Image (cartoon, rainbow, N blue to C red; front, side):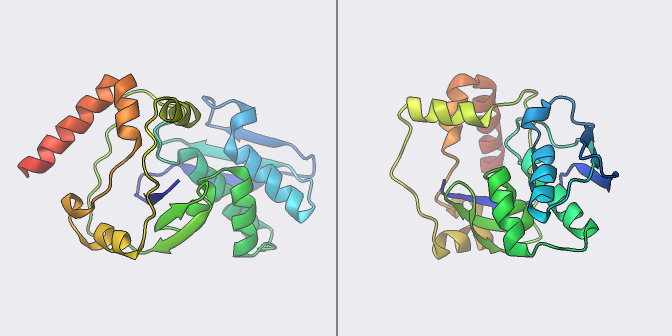
Length: 215
C-alpha cells in the first residue's frame, strides 16, 4: 500500500492481566470476533513465545471502535496488548523487537506502536512517522455495517481499479500536514470500489463533499 495513517481519539479500552502459569489466554468483550481471528489473542501468544513464557493472560476489552470499519480497531487493540505485556514483564523487548513481532500479527499493527501519523508503505510495516497538527476535527460516519478488508482488496483487484502506483513523498506529507484538504491532491482508492457495492457509502461521501464545499 501507499497511504497516510492518522490516529484519532476514538479508542477501545483494553485491560491486560497476567493470570498464573496455565498458558491460557482468555478474552472478554470481543464476542463478535472468532477466537482464531482475534488479534489480541495472537498478540499475547506471539509476545509470550518471544520471551519464552507460558503464562496465562486475561484480556478484557470495551469496544468503542466499530468492527469492520477500516479504523484499525483490531490492530490498535493488538498493539495495546503488546505494550501492556511488555511493561508487565519489565520491558524485555525493545521497540524494534516489538515492531518486528507486531508485523507478524497484522499489517497495520506496527503503526499503532508509532504514530501519531505516518506515511505507510509495504504491507503497512514500512513507516515514516510524523506529528500532524493538533487543531483538526475529524468527522467519522458509521454506516451501520462493516466491510471485510480482505474482500475489499479482492474487489479492488478484480474490478481493475489499480492505478499508477502512488509514492508518498515529503511534499505530500507537507500538503497533508499543513494544507487544506482541497490542496492534498490524493484520495482513498477504495472509495470507488466500495461505493459500487454499497451505495450508502457513496451517498455518505457525496453528502460530506457537499458539506465541505458549502463550508
